[in-house]
Length: 125
Image 1 (cartoon, helix red, strand yellow):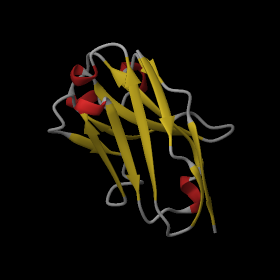
Image 2: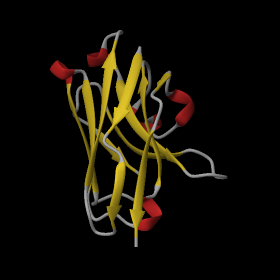
Image 3: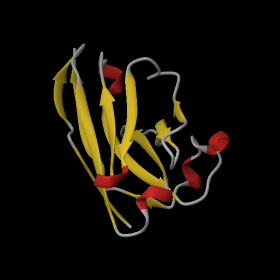
Image 4: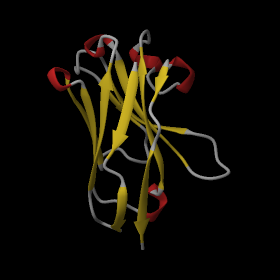
């Protein structure tokens, strides 16, 4: 499975960006998909996830109410709509796919089997 993240860029605080992650290979419709982010010197942290059915989503407290994860299985793509961006959202954002996980473990990085290359998001104050 190959994951290609895109959509990052530079935006002012309060602005919006939409990240996309296109998957190829594998069976996209069966994977739980997640977004994580990382800043230099810090561990990669969970941002959002969505189950294979799209019926359950899960967000980190820091982005709840501002970010929305969604998926379009016919396009093998997962999205992360980011609104009301803050400077502390600045990071490299990674998409990931999990073959087997439970809703309770959707935020656990080690549950994800495949990772994209990351896309930089920079929010200026």
